[in-house]
Amino acid sequence: MTTDQLVLRLRTDGVSWTPTDNGEVVVLDHATATFISANSSAAQLWRLLAQGSTESDLEAALVEAFAIDRAAAREDVTAFLADLRLRNLLTAEG
Image 1 (cartoon, rainbow, N blue to C red):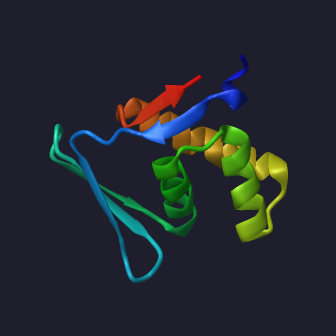
Image 2 (spheres, rainbow, N blue to C red):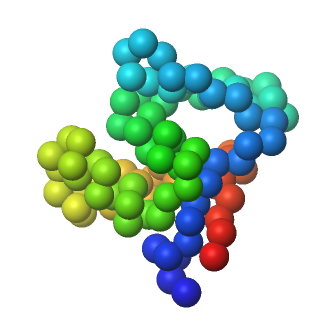
């Protein structure tokens, strides 16, 4: 199975988040007492990950929403997911 086939989800235990009026998301990781602010593109990825999504689906969402090319979307998604993994906020299901 390739990594693109994995369904990625946000960790739900010990994490609270809320959308803001300007399309962003504010996150609190209770374990580290860390607040994270996600801009509009990251917030879109965050909401998709809350439901469960593949990397390919995340890339497609950025391409559609922001009219960027697939390579730029892939780079953005890769960086965003790396940050979530570093913060231990992401899980994967085969």
